[in-house]
Image 1 (cartoon, helix red, strand yellow):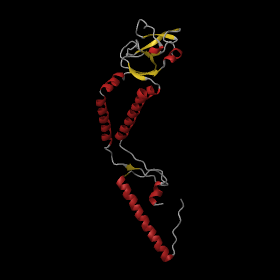
Image 2 (image 1 turned 180 degrees about the vertical axis):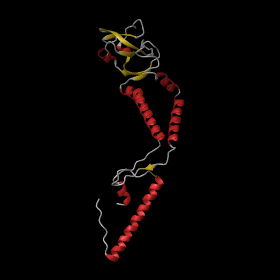
Image 3 (image 1 turned 30 degrees about the vertical axis):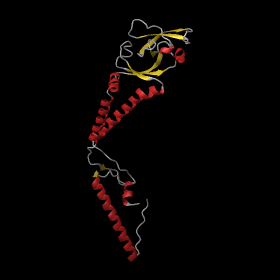
Image 4 (image 1 turned 120 degrees about the vertical axis):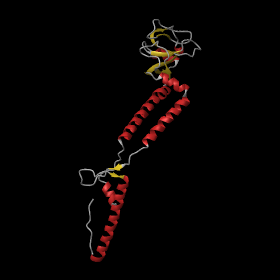
Length: 243
């Protein structure tokens, strides 16, 4: 083991950047984490539950759900609706056959029975902000059950869906600026912990540190040559160091 390795073994070498770089990295990690959680909430969770994320366009469910919110619904099969949907739960459904517009309202009543379409109940939904309930609906019309909502991101979600190319360019520009700014680094410094010392040695620049290690290696080689010559001429035996 070289003298350099022996000197580094008791302690450790750490890198310190400027406070601006530390803050920038912290912000980048926070933004990245939020982005990952947002993608999971908007796309991964609905996909795993056979559901979808929907943007609320009206205020019929205010203040529980407001225009611009995004809601995530769990997919339901018609045979699941009568047994799994209880009073007070929020569902998304098609108001009429062949009508692609989804409505999200709360179930305020449930009527059991046997109906011509083979289902065993009818649900009566109503918007929290509405004065009257909707017409009874069949389980066949139910698309999903509310899991959770994300406030205020619906307009942004719709804008990204309509302008995906512009959004992609914007994301690339933001990441480009981040890496460009983070590239301006101050000269790195090493903190060297020497054996038997209570405090760290003074900070050294990278170039000075490498030069110092090179000088110590040269001195170690010279010492070994001197010891070998002394042993040949005078039978000198160098002391054996432990550790």
